[in-house]
Image 1 (cartoon, rainbow, N blue to C red):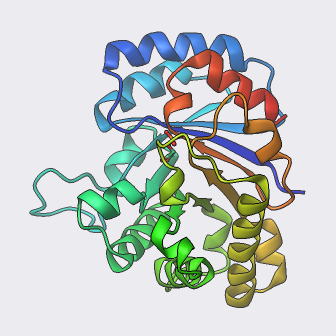
Image 2 (image 1 turned 90 degrees about the vertical axis):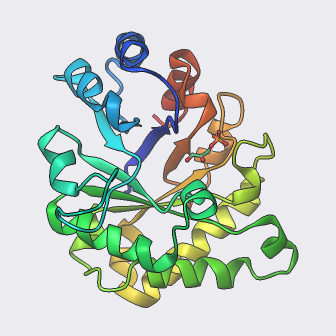
Length: 251
Ligand code: 13P
């Protein structure tokens, strides 16, 4: 039985002051919710406030990127060890916005995934097809290619610390949510790829989230899909009451 993981990806939103207020609100709505894991993936500058504010609660803190080198001349970058030392448990890697705007490739995503896992972070690996690729009928090929390259060199043991977020790029921030059938099918496809790489047991134990315009209204039907083990939520994770409704839907 896979546990559902509800993760908020704040993207470039909220100051440390806003983070403090948000965490207090979220604590109130997430109390006694033990049926799922709750993560907030915040901007680097908000990590300290988020870690401090969530101490002793069931809310975990994640970052939104990590560099693949342990240290060195990489101006503006942050290492896995730096994140761990700040109390971070999770890190989002390979988000489509990083691939689209910051030149992230499957090769750099793979390097980041390996560095994060080797350091002891839990990884939320984002994959997903473009609208054009879905129209061209190559969704399965794209998801297969991304999954295989992004996880190159990752062991079955390390897969226990990998969550995959299936985020169709056309559904991110567009209000155009995948149908339950599309979400379930794509997450199932990814599970099939994991099975071919690591075997059935690892595939059955891997948490695969859906992300892309998930909100308080559509969360329960998406989370009810057999292959959808949680959500990676952007816009709707910025309001504690909405995020709370999604957490409830995952219980
Ligand atoms: P939205 O929920 O705003 O569509 O964003 C999804 C996302 O990109 C989460 O990583």
